[in-house]
Length: 235
Image 1 (cartoon, helix red, strand yellow):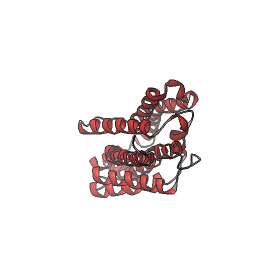
Image 2 (spheres, helix red, strand yellow; image 1 turned 90 degrees about the horizontal axis):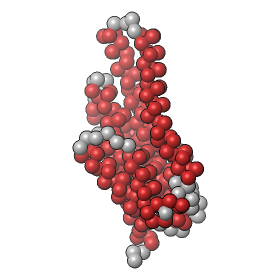
Image 3 (cartoon, one colour; image 1 turned 60 degrees about the vertical axis):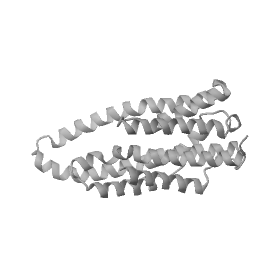
Image 4 (cartoon, one colour; image 1 turned 90 degrees about the vertical axis):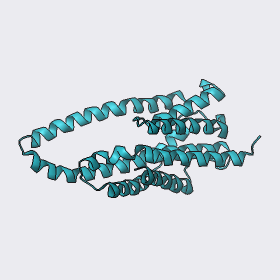
């Protein structure tokens, strides 16, 4: 039986690997449109995304606590083996979709992997139904809200600028694209990097290395750096 500390460090390694892969898997989401319209140089866009991913990841730990505390009823119901299985499944899915150029959500992969691993190891009774309802609802509603928001914003823009000549609008909106890409990169870091933070913290609590579900500073920094490096490499 592997030593508990060895398994915990394996979880840390896999969680950081997941963050790295998440970085290069999702970089294009933030900067592809700005690069394709030549609003920003590709190298500068990648650097901007990497820096803002890092900054966003350090913003808060709310998402990390949700991932670490709302999926299972108690940290005692999971162990490093369960978390390892979840991370391996999420990493393999991310690599597969990246290889074939398929758009997919790293969040869905990680949460699905964790639910599947916990249910297999401890049964569905170990899952926190109320917490899962909130998480799944947010995963389902986010694209719907984004679609509706995009529609309304586009209607507003057409109402405000529909009579202007296209060449005039293009100059102005290229600059606005830099702001939207920057906000997207920052929000990507603030949301997705925290998922690995939550996984590592959950493993530390279940292994008895820390007593409460509070993300240690070294976990914040390493997860933020891992995602930023993945963004820089995969951009």
